[in-house]
View 1: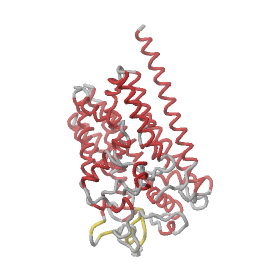
View 2: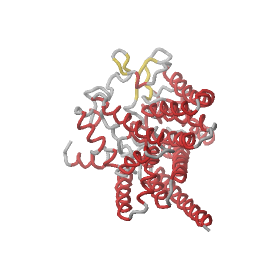
View 3: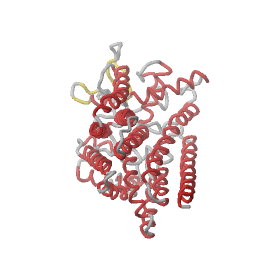
View 4: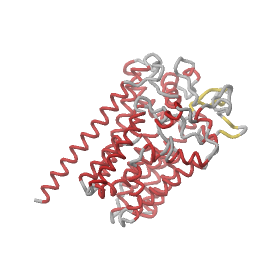
Length: 447
């Protein structure tokens, strides 16, 4: 009788998960269909995503990583570009973004171009939206399914599981970012997959051999998409080595090296240099130093000028106008959940992983120089922390289970979720806009 009730409960949960994920994907597909810049001239929303689209278009239409021929077209110029000597010995412009992601997206564009004969130059709306559907929707679907599976595995109550699954679909900025080409969604997906592997090898006594190459590949992929996730790769490597140095050497390392080869290989093809563009910002080797560059100190505007005070920057990055906790207060549950995990014998390692990486990543950005203390530029949130979302969602699970048995606590949790989803929904029309507290402050002339 008990088994029958448990099976029925599981079927109902799976139905709810399916409904949540399908609704999220349907909303995202509709939002992609309406993608357009503020002036309505292009389907690309900011200099950030346009920078990557320039590389995608140049690779397919011109067979080159040089974007000179692209940025001259109306609506295609971007401030996120660098300049250095090309293979012909002449200076050329390139996207300032690492080229691996754009190279991968160029594949679907090449297919669309070969089949239909259309180009992004001729039909930026139709082709751009088609590519966003082809790239972003599968990434988002894979991410949602992966995290929800972890929720189902770790959760112990129906209410707790469904609450966290709802947060996964509607309560974070990753769904906000899904309508634009960006590195944060792929990074978060990679973290989610690698985390599932880490949970596997730390929670079972027998060796899960298949998990080692999965962790190696996806933890490296996370770092390739989001530089701070290099810390996640390092900790994942350590955890795998502690579990089994033999399988780490034989399986983890080759899988990770595939990503490493792709990252540095595409960088060499693009720039004839192993170092990505952001590593070329020193005197005498500054790719951002060209005529009329936006990144000259006198040309920067708004948040890109940087926050002079570290204390004020720390305040706004945590509980202020770009705050991780003020914009997404549901993460308060995750903060408590981390310490619950630390007290759980089977989950202690994952708890330490989440705590260490969260602190290291935040401290890294709080200690940056003035020019880099810009909250991630014009964006719906403190985007440099977005890749941590799968880890924080995992930490939320035991707290959600505890809350499920307490009526008042459930109301508090729901309120935190509503506030978080409201912040996420504010940027749905364009994720490359300021968060609502900062936008309100600008209106009131507070900053």
